[in-house]
Amino acid sequence: MSKVAIVTGGSKGIGLAVVQRLLLSGYAVHNLDITPSDSGEFHYCDVSDVNAVRACINAVAAQTQRIDLLVSNAGKHLSANIEDTDEQTFDALFALNVKGAYAAVQSVLSLMKAQHNGAIVLIASDQAMIGKQNSFAYNLTKHALASMAKTTALDYARYNIRANAVCPGTIETPLFHNAIDAYCKKSGANKTQVVAEEARLQPLNRLGQADEVAALVNFLASDDAAFITGSLQSIDGGYTCQ
Image (cartoon, rainbow, N blue to C red; front, side, top):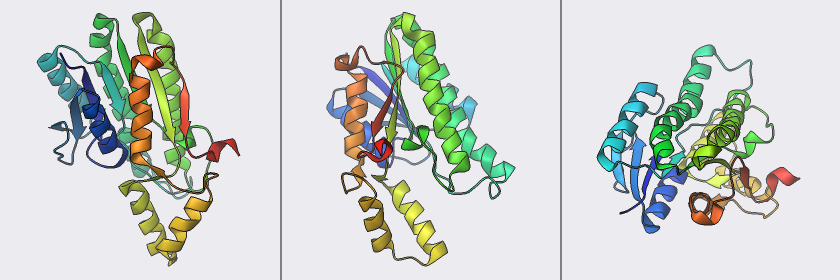
């Protein structure tokens, strides 16, 4: 019987790469997203809606009778300092990036506890470890995910449930390109030059790729990572060690 994985936000970027990698590893993958995808079994779900997340995961659990892996990936970026972040924008970002993860983790735990086995991977960011300019609310959400991984790891270790956070740096995804496009539109900068500058900021002198993040997620889900829990796993080309 195939292992069962749930991935939130699995239709684009890092999420899609994770879904595809897990399928290659033999998982039956259930993708919770608002954007349809042919990779894995798609479930329409607004991950910022706690009740929708719970209903979706409960339906998967009823269908499969097991959940071996949760990858909480759904999220969005926001470039703004604290003065430029209004309450509505702040709440919307937390609803998706943090409350969506909270609902997903909470919803898989009862079945994982019954199995006495499970892996949870939260997709955080290099901003779970460092500060960046014009990133007030986004940075807060990623620190929150790091905390969620650590506390969940400690609370559920006795059930053989592992929780870790993956902390990507600058990864070339649609999210990255959307952020660069928005910056260039606002500033008038040349996109080719901005992308090249972003690559030069990385010690390895290039952008990361989504399939590289997916490979790390796949490893953390595997038995080879059986003694890894509560960790923040950097995959940032060396950026945060500077």
